[in-house]
Length: 129
Length: 429
Image (cartoon, rainbow over all chains, first blue to last red):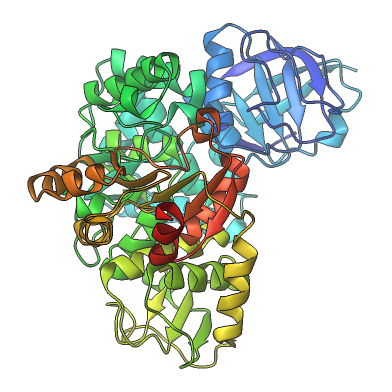
């Protein structure tokens, strides 16, 4: 699948899929990488080393700094795939240097186990279903 | 002429604006914007990691919003300064950048901090909060940022000219610069403003372009509307902001207004709506130049203003009155001093301002008059970004439409929204 590069880099890893938007500030714990937003479908899951797939960001603009902090604490996702990366997530992944691609039909990744995210070429490839 | 170069650049540019992101994906991680050789080199990392990420951020935002190229900015104002707003994640990010020795390239000012940077102890801010806040300020200082902490940079030595491109953050400052001065800025987030300061540039889109500065709705202010107090302009701004949301309004019927009153009007509109630019017939510099024909019109009468006063007042008796949102001018402080002369306050009155204006007020003896009455002139911070809810206050009296908009949510306060005379009367009786 071809998308648009938000932040470059090439990684592969296990998919963590969220059908709902993610708000990083107040939604993801910066020290543990766990999703702490109540009622979120991924509540309690850890984003560390995952290829995090979600439609778009939401919430406070401080979320950009949370993404940066996750990376610094070694708790960041390995890569991010969005339907539409808005400015909060775009700012965060660029500052943190996390590969990120958007304009991807993420529904096709619901059942994917591992993917290759080649953000240098804006490509996403399913390795294992 | 190097035809290939022209061709490649043209194709690159046209791909982006015509294919709407379908064809230009072939460019991979490259941008659809025209970039200079120097910008390309920074993007390739030749000037180090910080500059590379900062310019990447600007280029991506430019791509998202359809910018054609980068433009130099004359000055920057960075938001995301209060420890209350950005917390540990923001603090650590700023310290990282500062430690890498990166400096800003243009005159850069700061938004208000979470406390008075000098007098915090007397005002009751906690040691813990102060320590973290001062670390943030220190990081900015290391980057060469002027550590001013004000939402009125234009009153404190950062004054852009008409049509100058700038990258400012704070919504009322953005509104004032665009509308009252006629400078050009989008409303930047904290990181994108910092990136503009470090690169000295911003992507060319939105309010940087003349076509996007045209009014979209006419606001007729009825002759029966009283516009005397700052709170009257705050109420008008609050009401209009709710009506027009993110449109550009063109006001008719405001016969006169000084810069303090326009500051109050713009601040309230930017808070209740997302108005980053407005025009006022006969008063603001672009009003005569823009196209006003064929626009829908909304009317504002006395009734709407009275209703807005009621709507914004959620409390009865203020524990504290805080003025200076946006930061007070010398004229506003002088007015407060006149009203407090020979009086004794029973409950506190603060007026927030920038450090520069406080210095001047101090020399004029105005701070002394206000303090003798039991009031305080607070610099560097404001009620919206400081942790007043942790200082025992439950109801705050304000004359600002912007403060009235934010205090219930950000600071868990009940609000008494009234004009300055009414508020002083309540605190002295």
